[in-house]
Image 1 (cartoon, rainbow, N blue to C red):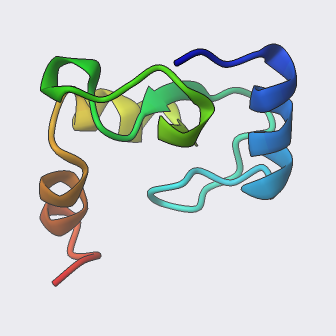
Image 2 (spheres, rainbow, N blue to C red):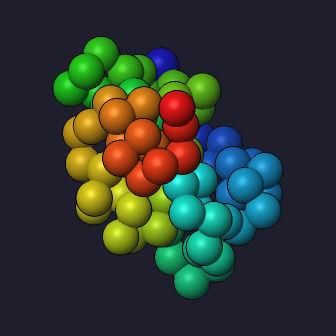
Length: 76
């Protein structure tokens, strides 16, 4: 899969300029993250992308999205 700059802008609007993990404002900068890491078989298409703040993206690394969110107490 692939994505465009327009896809990223649409994601920014859909997320209302908030980090997908902690909901902090990301208007001043964000990291483009693959929800399912490429190393775990995730694709590069727009359906596998999310915008995270720097601290969330750096702490997520290549973790599975469920493991990452559970480590933050956000999923059962």
